[in-house]
Image (cartoon, rainbow, N blue to C red; front, side, top):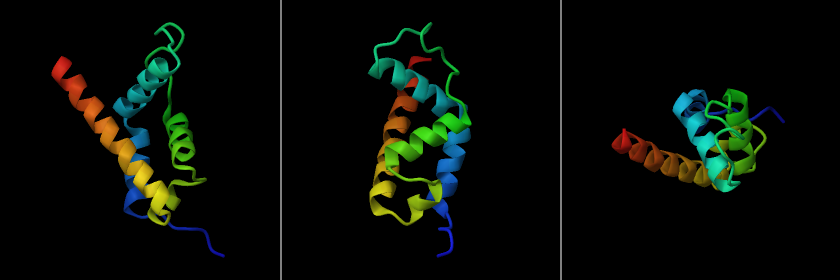
Length: 95
């Protein structure tokens, strides 16, 4: 069977993982979730590969290409984007 090709969602996910602000969101989310201090998990800890790995794990997929073919993964990804968008909006209003 040929490998699954990614479409719009896979491209969006790749761009999201390249986004520095999204990676900052992951830093702060992890700090909050595990009650860590900034010295234990500084801003800038997540790199593009970490973001990709986190996203694949959260969506229960092996490759971002699956986002365009797996309804569960697509819905999970859309939820992640929504929560990130809300967080980004609050960051702007606090600046």
